[in-house]
Image 1 (spheres, rainbow, N blue to C red):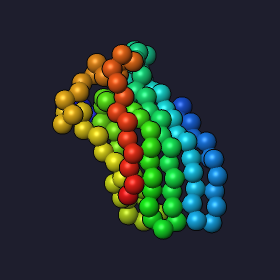
Image 2: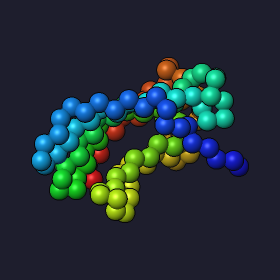
Image 3: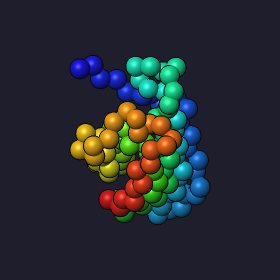
Length: 111
């Protein structure tokens, strides 16, 4: 099966604050399906990220329950650390979960 990413255009990242020990951002994205970019509905997500200098990241927000969603962190160009993964197959969701009448997956992660 062919694989394709949704892309990074139209990502909105808003810096709320940065101190010597942490940074807080709001990130949201609404993008068309990779194989059908002009067909609705979009893939949507919105997260609040608090990144600690100590290495801990706090993520709160929600995303469509389709397709896969993944969040990673790399400090100073180092190894990427998996912070969050959502597998729609394991969750029993499908492309219908892109439509607004289906609930988003709410997340609260600290890693």
